[in-house]
Each structure stands twice: as structure tokens, then as C-alpha cells.
Length: 126
Image (cartoon, rainbow, N blue to C red; front, side, top):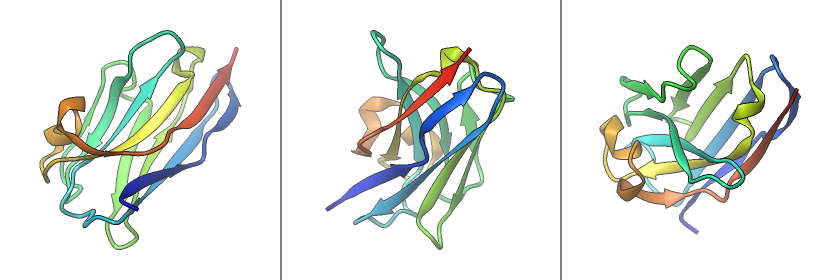
């Protein structure tokens, strides 16, 4: 099955930290930029962060800049999202996604995503 698989969601208090992990199954991984998206209840899915296939370019949504860090390990086919200083507004289902190419922007737009994970719930209590 060709799909990213996320791990590591859960419940955390505001101000706390959580790390999400994602493993890429069934595709070349290093040939794909990877991104994280999230969908809060009653809202549309939104972009969070992206990283180029090489790991050399990183981009973040303004809402998470300075608090979240995306990274990847191509040898393990893993991508991570370290989330610090979490806020209740960060509560959402978080999705790992593979972009259509190596450059980071291919994983920052939903129309360019080729593989989606199933999602993992992150809940931040106030």
C-alpha cells in the first residue's frame, strides 16, 4: 500500500510539546517533498509545514512559525513535526502528505499532494 503513516498524536496541555512522526510506505520518499497539514473541527484542512526532498528547504505557515519544526530522515523514510508551545488553537487532525516533486512547494499546496496519510489527532487543553 502506498501511503504515509503518522504516529504520535495525543492530548497535551497548552504550552507543552508533542512530536509527530510519519513513515513513507511504498514510494521513493527521497524523491518527494513532504508536508504536514491539519484540519480543526468545522474548518477546512490547512497547510502547516513543508520540507524539500533533500531536507534543504523548510517552510512554515505563519500560525506555527517559531513554534513548530519539520525535519526528515531519508535513510529511515521518516518525516517529523516537533510542536512546541502548543496552543488550544492547534487542536486538529494532523495529516502527513507527500508532494508531487522534490521541491518544497510541491508539498505546500493540497492540489499537488500525491499521497495522504490517514491523520492523527492532536488535542491541546487549556
